[in-house]
Image 1: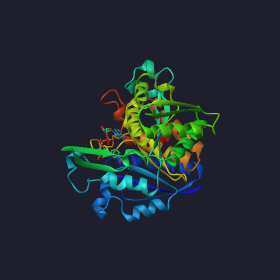
Image 2 (image 1 turned 120 degrees about the vertical axis):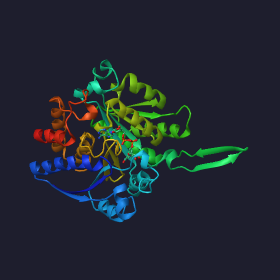
Image 3 (image 1 turned 90 degrees about the horizontal axis):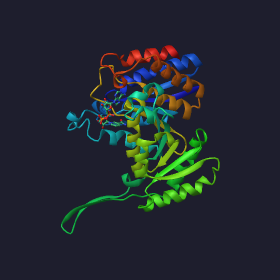
Image 4 (image 1 turned 180 degrees about the vertical axis):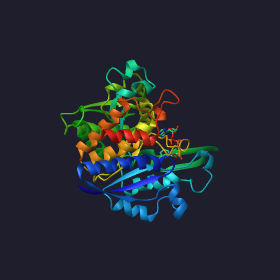
Length: 359
Ligand code: NAD
């Protein structure tokens, strides 16, 4: 297969974990006879240093002419947030890409690796019994983020409003996506809303029910967002596919990420209606560990695994990488973030060496 991938490494640990992922990409190319044309684009602070822009035109073009985007992370340390280089860095890069390509659905698989049950903040009795393995689908273009924002004085009081807005078309996209994903898993969709208080949620629930008629093989349940947060802590194994609006998804997906024990383990994907997608780790640029060769490359490598599955439909290759990561963990290798003892971890590049040896 011949395909092109836009590689946007970005800042902090972005280039480090991307370098490790590129080693995996090359190995897969070699083993299966594929040709992945990697097109490198600058993004974030590193792009600002060169072009005084967080997302230069050249990078736009590289993304446009690629079959998929593999993104690292952008942003700088809190102590440097006053510098122009870092101001609005995420907003000017990742949010612009989201809007430009109309990425309407974000997918975040939440999986606690069997070998890493012990690093989950939940008790072994909760994680261990049935494991934690679910997917959160979050709407990305609507809700309070894109509605009108206003700050004003009313009755002599500083006042602010943020408009939350959804139309049925936006909800239908997510609904169809969730049922299709569930069909390939355990055929269960949990739609999360706040229908006891919000009109946008009532509409969300109505549309989910309507669309579910087209997927009689998938079980649909509704759950209030507050209950969902609670269920994450007491019975996370019950979930298969969770689908929810932008704001709830933003909060729930980070809470769910916490269940796994490290942000370094979780990939994500953002799709538009045509199926074009951007793949990236769930965490940020982690300036606190950048430049030390200790970042966990799993989230970035699994982002490539998602790319193989969803953009290229190369399942055998994807599953081989997943198995190699399991083998690496099973053999006791750990990066610092998932290691119990202070000095019993390997570097990011050594960890990737071991994964490569199992591919
Ligand atoms: P962060 O996700 O970068 O880091 C939070 C914690 O998780 C840190 O302790 C970090 O060391 C750890 N961590 C994250 N990824 C890891 C990995 N692969 N291996 C090991 N540990 C890992 O969040 P933050 O510190 O709040 O933000 C740092 C910068 O990243 C900020 O500038 C922020 O704006 C930016 N950010 C960017 C994105 C993105 O590019 N999509 C997302 C979130 C935050």
